[in-house]
Image 1 (tube, rainbow, N blue to C red):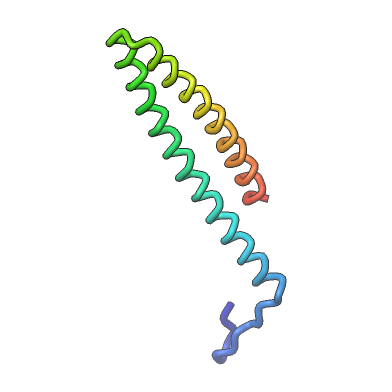
Image 2 (cartoon, rainbow, N blue to C red; image 1 turned 120 degrees about the vertical axis):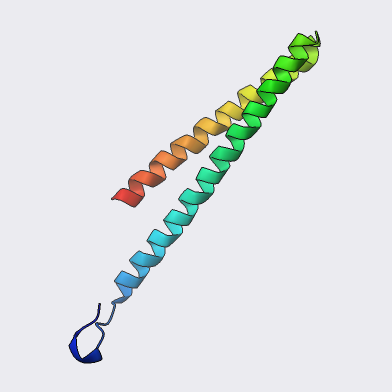
Length: 92
């Protein structure tokens, strides 16, 4: 904050620490967003491969893809819960 005559108000150590923590939280939120997007894209890709394998009659390969999709969706749910928790912390 600027004060008259060119003086600046000194920022206390708690204010600086708060700013640093908020920046770190926002960076982590961005990382989680990128991870969620990457998992979603991978899930779509695996689903298409699963459908293709099913259409070709390769049931065993389709089963492997389906199991991989199930694991990926579990991870996606964990990431989404983490995103929501982090958003709550940032908003407080």
